[in-house]
Image (cartoon, rainbow, N blue to C red; front, side, top):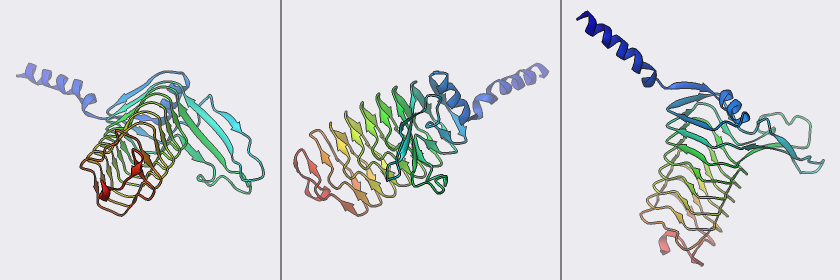
Length: 259
C-alpha cells in the first residue's frame, strides 16, 4: 500500500506542471524576438503589456514637423510568432502613440510607434483581456487570428495583409476596427461574432472574403467596401443596424436585403 501511495504522489507531482497554466512575463517574449528566436507558446498566460513597437531594431522613419505630421518609429518582428490557447492579461501592442499614453505634453507633434511582421503570425484560440492594436501593421506572411476572444478593442485599421488572413470563429466583444485595412490574398471571417460595432468601411479585399455564418450584433459599417468574386455571406446574420451604402459585390450593388 505504501508503495502504491508513493507512486501516486510521484505521478501527481509529474503532471501538476502540465495542469497549471504557466505564466510568462511579456518582457521575456520581447527578449526572444530581439535575439531573433522564434516565439512559440501554448497554454500560457502572458502578463504585462506585450509591446512589439519597442524592439531593439526600432528606427525613426519620420521626423515630423511643427505642422500636423507625427514622428514615427517602426519596429520589425523578424521571427515567426505562434500563440495557441494563451491568455494575454495586458495589452498587445503593434501600434500606440504618445498621445494615447498622455506623454504628448506641450509638443504639437504626436509620436507614433508601429510594428511590422516579416514572418508568419499565428494567434489562435487566445484570450485578449485588454486592447489588441495592430493599426498600420504590415503582415508579409500568413496571419492566423482564428478562435480568439477579444474582450476589448481589436484595432486593425489600415493594416495590410499581404498573404492569407483568417479570423474564423473569433469573438469580437469590443469595437472591431478594420477600416481601410487591405487584404491582398484570400481572407476569412467564417463564424466570427461581432458583439459591438464592426467597421469595415473602405476595407479593400483583393481576393474573395468568407463571412459565412458570421454574426453582427452591433452597428456594422461596410460603406464603400468592394467585394470581389468569390466573396460569400451565406447564413450571415445582421442583428443590428448596418450601412452598405456604395457597397458592391463583383461590381454590382450589394446589401444583405438585396442578395
